[in-house]
Image (cartoon, rainbow, N blue to C red; front, top):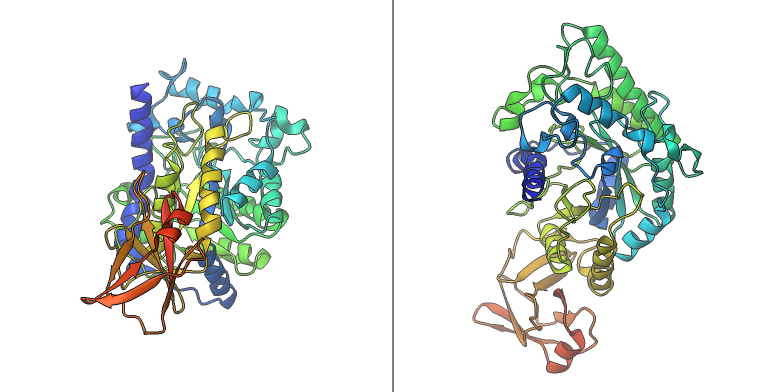
Amino acid sequence: MKKTLVTLIIAVLAHTLSAQQHSEQNHDKYVVPTDPKVKEKLNQWQNVKFGLMMHWGTYSKWGIVESWSLCPEDEGWCERKGPFKDNWYEYKKAYEDLPKSFNPIQFNPDKWAAAAKNAGMKYLVFTTKHHDGFAMYDTKQSDYKITNTPFASNPKSNIAQEVFAAFRKDDFMIGAYFSKPDWHSNDYWWSYFPPKDRNPSYHPARYPEKWKAFKQFTYNQIEELMSDYGKMDILWLDGGWVRPFSTIDSTVSWQRTIPFDQDIDMPRIAGMARSHQPGLLVVDRTVSGEFENYVTPEQQIPDHYMPIPWETCMTMGDSWSYIPKENFKPARKLIHILTDVVSKNGNLLLNIAPGPEGDFHAEAYQRLEEIGKWMQVNGEAIYNTRGDNELGKQNKLVFTHNGNTTYAIYRADEGETLPASIEISKLTLAKTATVSLLGSKEKIKWMAKDGKIVVEIPEKARKSAGNSYAWALKINR
């Protein structure tokens, strides 16, 4: 059990490394979109703040890390388990036989959409295909897909289509996660050469026709998603080692290991995608430039405000994929993460992994419900705001802004009650400025004292505020 937990932690760190280094070091390379429709969509996305991500595939049957156990690298997150673990070829066959018994009969996307909406989430990113190449939609390019399983007889067998439709009904922005590498495709891991690592098993420059076929396969699969699955807002591309060699940043350790050019022609893909979905946000993760409309630090939060559009993607528990016993973060921590991210000008994309039967852990629903209760009172301090680059974090306070309104969010320790007095530095207010406590109708007084703003919260307001994970002061300047 301990070994399993260590492996999961290593896997999380592995997932984190690329986006962490990229977001911290390369955000100065961000390219502002010029397309007015993309700009408009980006502004909309920055306003909604809080989204749901789902990693789901046949790997949930074994309760293991998504895809990576197939990767023949000597890394903790690629560790194989089970009766076939000592022979990679036998393991890969057993893994790729999982669709024969994958039958998520509890699948109910309306239930997920309702829970996410009640939690205050407003956009979705769903894994249509991870690195293992298994499509959670009815692709016509491959038989390795959800509609070629025992679940095929279910009227909701085209899972991605059903998920997108359910969330779209609840006014979510819709995002399709898609892995650029594909370890099932014979045009990526060509059976003539056994794979040595996560990269193609052949040198693309030596076998240009093979690589050309893979590029067309990728293009065709993305076109299916962009043309046959309703209105799309985000194309969220993963697998950042598939990139032009010229874009490799040698200061980032994992990028230095990319052995050769893997250009899949992003201008052509993005042009096609936007011809079907005008204004589409394209997120070619870790590949700085025109096709990374926002950056995606993974499993971590930058330690400072970032002026560009960005999103922390993070797991609600320890794992991106389903594991039988998950260690979910407490609601207090999740709300503090959300407020930290938003105060630094970002969005939070929170991952929950469905299990092999097609549903979340019961505890995940509990967390969503707890977050929702807080958001119903305090969502005004989150939505339609921008981060703070003036006041900074002050003790337990973080700040967001919407025009001339500032929100001071006091993030409480467990068991802590709202203080009778809160001091704010670096804030200058006109004499006509007003302060209120979200969720309370009591009048709040403030005064300027010793270069600070002192907010006095009367006992009645503190009692009505009750116990909470955080409280938000609304300051109309």
